[in-house]
Image (cartoon, rainbow over all chains, first blue to last red; front, side, top):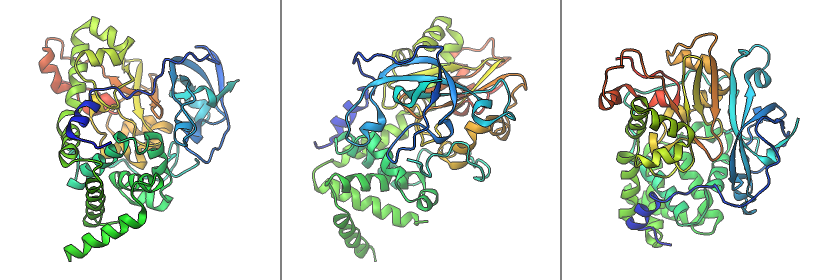
Length: 115
Length: 103
Length: 193
C-alpha cells in the first residue's frame, strides 16, 4: 500500500485501538487479589520485571484487548481482559517505601494468577 | 524479554535532564525518522508490537548510547529487513552511494 | 555515538528507498511531520483541563470516560484511542511514566519530551516518585498518597491537575496558561496565578 498524503490524513482521524468486541470471559473481578506471574519470556512482553511475583488487587477491568505479546510474534491477537492492577509501593519496593503510596499498571489476564 | 529497555527500579542513571522550551524535534532527521516508522506501520509492513520488540533487541550498549529517534530508525530498518521489504544489503548499498555523493 | 550527520544520512537512505519503491510519496512524509510538530501537543490537553476546571458536568464525563470526552472536544488522534484521566487532589497525587518505552497520550499532549523517554525518569519514576517530584521542585504532603501509573499497555494516561488557588475568578481561556505539559504528566502542579 502506497502511503499518500490522503492516507495519512485519514489514518489520524481513525482510531487504531487494540480494544476488541470479542466476548472473552474475565478470570478476575474488581477487588480480587492477584499475583503477577513470574515469567521470563525471551520475546516481547508488557510485564516489567519489577512487577513479577508481586501481589496486587484488580482496580479496574478495562475490557478486552488484543495481546501485545502474541502480536509482536505473529501469534495472533489472543484477545483477553486487560486490568488496571494496584500494587502498594511497599509490596514492590519493600518496607522503606511510604506505606500509603501505590503503583497502577495495566496487565493482561495471561500475566496474572490468583493470590 | 529481560532487556535493557525494562528500566523500572534500576539505579545509577543520574539526574533527570530537562530542557526549557524543548522543540518537538531537535533535528530535521528526527521528524523524518518518526514519519518513516509511521509509514512502515501504516503500510502494514509491521505492527507496533513488532516494532517495539525490534527496538528492545538493539544491543544494550547501543540502546543507551543512541538517541530516541535513532532507536526508531534502527527499529524500522530491522523490521523492514525482517519482513523482506528492504534488506540490510540494499540499505547499505544505498548508504554507500549517498555518502559518495556527499564527499 | 553516531554523529547527527551520519544519522541524517541513514534516514535519507531509508527515505530514498521507500520513495523509490513507491511505498510512500513525499507529501505524506511532510504531512506526518506537520501533524506531530504543529497539530498535536499539550495545547490540546490544556483545553481539556481548563474545561474540566470550569464545567463540572464535563469533568464528570472526563473522569468516567476520558476517551469519549476528549473526542467530544475534537482531539481524536493516534495514541489517544483509549484514554484515562486521573484527578489530583490534596490527598492523592498521580504521576505517569512508561518504564518499558515511551507510551504517551499523543492526541492531547503530543510527543513526549526527551526527559520522559530518558533512562533516569523511566528508572526512578516507578520506584522513587517522591524523589522525582522533589527533583522537579514539586512539593507533596508527606501523608498524601502518591500514585504512579506505569502506562506500558494499551491505555494512555493524563493527569487532571488541581486547579490552583487564586484562579477562582479566571475564565476558561485565561486558565489555559496555568496548565503545563508537566502538570498533565503529574511531575508538576499547575501554575499558580
